[in-house]
Image (cartoon, one colour):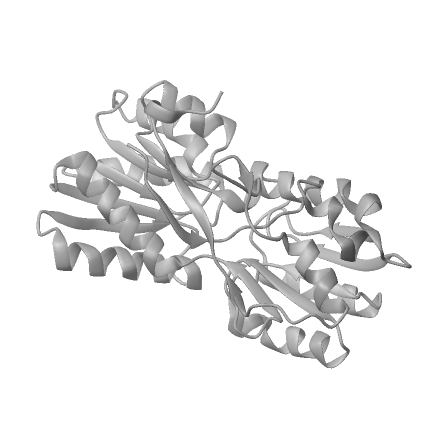
Length: 314
């Protein structure tokens, strides 16, 4: 089974088509672009940071990457302030809580700095390449319904219960099961602060507290790698509790091969590829265009692909 929808973010930091951008190749001087990454130590966010750095010389910008090791909004705000002090031409970031980032983004924009929001949708940014969160939650409900025959007690694991994009995803999920799937209920919604160690503990606690739980929906990227060991320690066999994960990290794909994870919703923005082709314009290309006065769409949707055993990548 393979489901797709145009409703998630696409962040193209690689030279996949972007290096050929007229805006980039004709730049008379290097642009000063900062990437305040929410989790550069994690595989997917780390990969996006490397691609951002690798494309810098060819695209004509000075690349600065920074970010905390764990979710830390005050640290990110401080790093955006550093970018402002460095006279950045543009700042790429993920405003995990738009209200908390509003003042610093307003400050950046008042100084003529382009602010691009990736992964997180923030109307206050110059533009966002982000998640259609309601659609993501509804699609997740559809996937779970198809995989369970419409009968499931679903445990949800996310960063916390306040991160706006995840809140909207859960709201979309709840709306979809209320409208279409009376046999699906939500067992619990737990938080791990995007920490794999905490996630492992939460999985064990969820399994113990909710013996009727037959499905786990993971909506943050650090937790999937903890599934095999945590489930095994809790006495579960592969597939006994089905799992819908997020992103396509190596450990997640291996867990799908081994039967611990049923499927994962791969966010194409990390690799900027949809159906084998570069999707649209990358964030850096759009940022450079915006610096040069070319107006960008306020919100750019990308796509997500359901990966299961049937369509695992090489």
